[in-house]
Length: 286
Image (cartoon, rainbow, N blue to C red; front, side, top):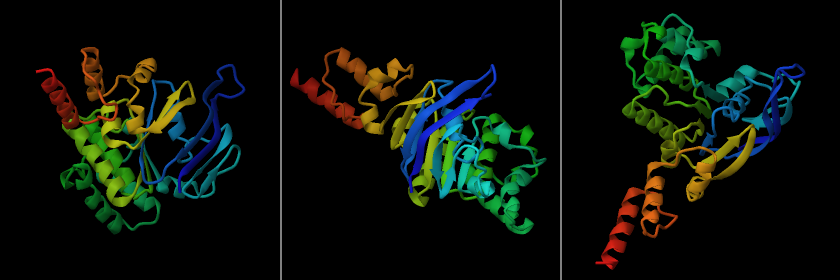
């Protein structure tokens, strides 16, 4: 079942001099079982939007239907705890999700909160640690003694241990080195392809959008300005420049080649195909 968002609005500090409309009439149908990127400049409303998906924020207007839950203004969400189990949200700043004295206790908090025994929760924690690239030597360490990248891994483990149907990731590779970022993205893609989880990825990294996502939603000033299949989206790099987002490297390379007289097939989105196209055109002029 897709995520259905209709006329969604959110105003911070409503009816005060500090009122700010962060979302303005959002209409979206986010496909189930796909990887959807949510992009836009800072302040476009990305984080505000995803915090509605598990009830952290309630709409000022409009409705949202997700995992069998109906969310609307002024209506208390029935069993919000279950909603947050079904829809796992990893914050942009992992420190917001870490609060226990040890990593083991932090990751086990969710399962125990749902009635899992101490022993079973401990086993779940041990199973999830290697999934995020950590080992049992971390169990008794304080999460606040970790690097930014390690904190992010622990925060992700604390969500994955609950086995959510929908995984919402707000800049999930921030603070990770390139290898760590690739490992995390591979993990998320495996969860999508092998377990069928719906993944929503808030990111500024267009390489990740091109290489891992199926669908793109663009926000600007609290409104949806574009929604498209990933391949179709990157056929129009001029639009990315208009909204202040740097295109992926292969798209930039194609633009440079076109400026130097090469003809570029808009459907080419991988390096091998690009090299083949260049070789054919060079041979024609030999």
